Image (cartoon, rainbow, N blue to C red; front, side, top):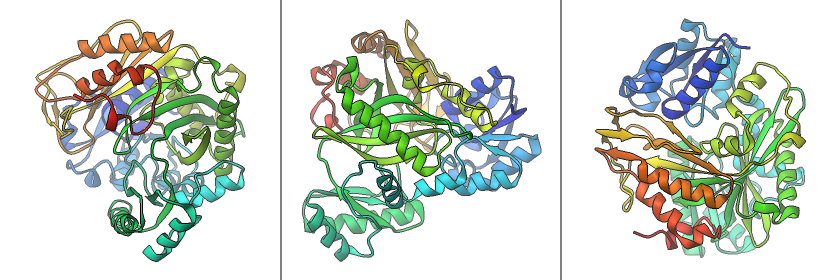
Length: 449
């Protein structure tokens, strides 16, 4: 096992990795920007190294600075968390060249997954159902228009090198496609440094379901069941839960087995190892592969609470070369869990709401877990993602988890900034949500103020 782990991230995920590593007897190193110098994750690590100014490009995306921090502190491994350098094959390769273990998948697997259009080809060859669409990036808008006629409108224009909903837009007709093709191309170039765009059939109101994967470097690969992430705003997840109501209580057993088989086949096609997530759409009674994420997901706690697995601990063991001792038959569901991303934003207009946390009192109670990046008195700056915490609540049943969640959200006291806690309460109290009838356009029609 590693002697010292550098955590190349910030906030709640840095704190979580730090706690797991220390519990395994591993010394920890935090890295931070000037904007984060006073946050809890910095002082909780055994050592802390300043990376640079607030902008991510000068700090959390500065590969040279991160590697120098690892070398200067004697860290023999780096955990990237999620976001920032977590899916950067160049960073993973640089770690390997420096003799430092990257806690994540092999760089080769990351490269296979990075180009979404090429990933589609790879998994389709492995027998995984994919959303009908173009096999390659499109050279120009005329090629896009011709492809859309073949696929059928509506279509979704997507950046091949993208993620997180960036460089993605739907078109219902040729005029709209001409407009969004150019927009997606421009956004792709700005965000990912390349213009490549492809198109897929657009499902107006699908469910978004994903499968957690764990694999070691000895050929062992298992799934850790599914999560549902259909409650979204602008392709960004807001609430996640396990199990998906679509499969709860043994429903749709044949489809769930198809889902798990497809997820394993997709991961194997990439040569995957460590923790990862295979994402699918569900529409009209069937599933379709979207992409695989080469990292830990923000919503991994709902899987942990319903399977009893510590995914970060397994990430570290796998990266250290250990065999995965958990067998597929050992992975069993216990109860239900929901996760709420607590953002510093207006709960109606969704504008960011940075500022000081004058009051910050976390909820407690049966089944309540809070993964927080902040403490009372800290300031939420506008430099990074506005998520200040993740509230995860479990129960013996989905109904119990919902009631516990309502109580916990009402007990969560935050003053000095606005948060989206009222939005979460509206979602939980909506009868359609409580019935488990979810889709990605839920917030367009439900949980209104």
